Length: 116
Length: 114
Image (cartoon, rainbow over all chains, first blue to last red; front, side):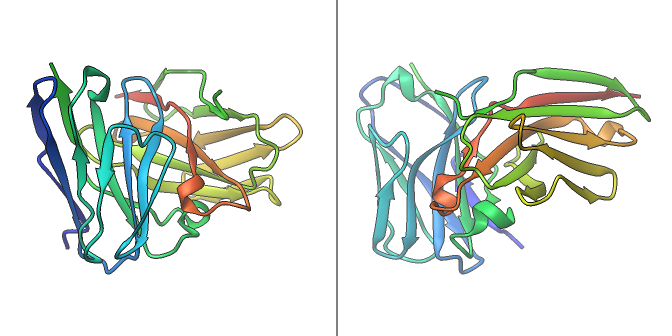
């Protein structure tokens, strides 16, 4: 009964380092998303994917890259980490693109990233 | 430019009383509104939604009211329980977009005191 699993839960990076946030879902959902939540702010969409091999930019894609080689996995890559990328990152998945109306958007527990 | 606004960062109520969380929006194209609840160290979970063709939707202790003319919606929790203490996000979507177009507010932290 795992749902959406994110790793790591916490990470501290130095400026200029790179890392990958992992996201896996076991619900066979086609749609997957990466959000970031800055302190006192709402969730902002970074990238999303409508299926294996297909990704697209969200509202705040700069400084990030994604790939979707399988239905289950949707890793988020940070290249050249900057302090502005300090945030909590949430991966989510949905069965339908209509999840924005049904509410059937399932989130992982989040990954807290600090860039110093 | 915030399209979905939750102007109260926090709200504190006594157990058993009513909690009212407010949300305003600016985009008249939004036609679905959702509330998500988030506990610390967990991801948001869906709570309740309302279509713009309705003005009220009820699910147990949770009721969402929509006032389209005022571009305002509110979430009522009656009676409030300590387990309701969480951050509540208002979100909205428009007909032309899928779930990738969901817009979230900043959230309101609700504390229900025993």
